[in-house]
Length: 628
Figure 1 (cartoon, rainbow, N blue to C red):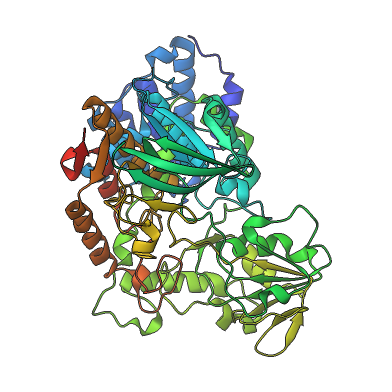
Figure 2: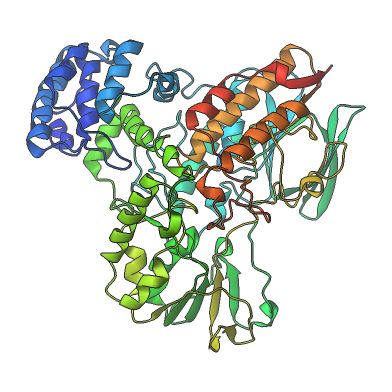
């Protein structure tokens, strides 16, 4: 097929290009890897910077050559003539784009993510090969992904979703300002790109729409039961199935299921602190994930309890509409400066992503690689380091100084300084992104920041350390029951309720399988939250590929039961705990939702992405016991 692209359209669009990416894709058009030696070299990429620090003159040179080469290709060739580089050439292209030598052990992972050959993209469901059925619990991001991949593998499935609609966290969190904090052109399924994101970090309605499109494109609606809550599960050793109880429209159902995949995640059960007098308050009160349809902000006296990720987005979005806005903050967040955080994607950039072959794939790589594992080394505690400044090593201290300077540059009210500059190491808690909106909101005359938690409430409002403060509306931006995995389901694999056994110290293998729970898998399970790299979608794709490999092994060998060996789980958990003992997330000055009641990290991964990708790309049957 010949491609017809108007030269002026192309010329205009190239102004919006990421020039490291534009230069690299010329290899596809020219079939000549040496062209990279003739082009200006990008500097080392950093997270969020997509121009390689190239000068205007260097960009112009790349643009001029690209325009000639691409126009010539369009006039004389077809899509079938696009060149697919060898592995060695792809490595050179990777090195060029990010301005550094991409380590060889990352090449297989990055090549699969790039998927230049188009393998597994938009595959149709395979013919069902077995009567065995998998139940997916949850129709959020990971549940939709699980359904797509099970169907591709020819595995029968159905989904139970407690809400009356799909989307999970992107359905529930409708609060003002709700948006993703991973660049959207990476925060999407690797096989289902969206070229039309309106913002670099899209808001909740657009994210929900993306997952809806995927849901209906793959006919998942024909397998989904909304308004259905799984309440209890117990494994029946005699039938090798789960005896499962669910509740739908007040009706209780009991059934047997072969295999269960939990896709309920970590951030789906709202957490409201145990506050004295909580129910005495006579005004409007709700958790941020349960935002009401009614107008509860305009010209109201509003309190926001918390200053984490949700509050960080809510406060700037509502501050000017409130009569008064008071924020109760136990500890301030560290901020990563991101000028693109509220920025729109211009139309020329969308055109390039959709129309220039391979551009979107390499652009995704440029967003991914600088944010993969480079940060991790800076998150290890140096025992010899003087931590009196609130840092854990030299590099971490340099980041502390950088972030502190960035915040100080935005502060004109000196009374805010001690309230907003954290005293714990950077990255110890969830790192938040901002383009100045948070501190700008704190400077508004109608906004007050109190550096204290809430211990007591009254009929009129909140009793602070100084006096009773009256409010019309109280918003709890206080997070979720992240450490209570699978809550509120009761799951008994034969040795008792899982949560009762482990409480807030869950044991797992890879965060996916559990020795007390046969025929049970989890996505976004214990220890799989990402706080240093990648995106949760990347992790979920790793997990479902592993799960599908395990189920296919069962089917091909006529196994009825799969259970991870306790010793394998124990070895993994020991390694997990020992790694965290050396890292910032378990530092004595840090308290966060990553930790359980004993201060041990249970939610967040300490692994390099490449480690986890390698483990989940290679299902090892020797790690499991089977029954036929």
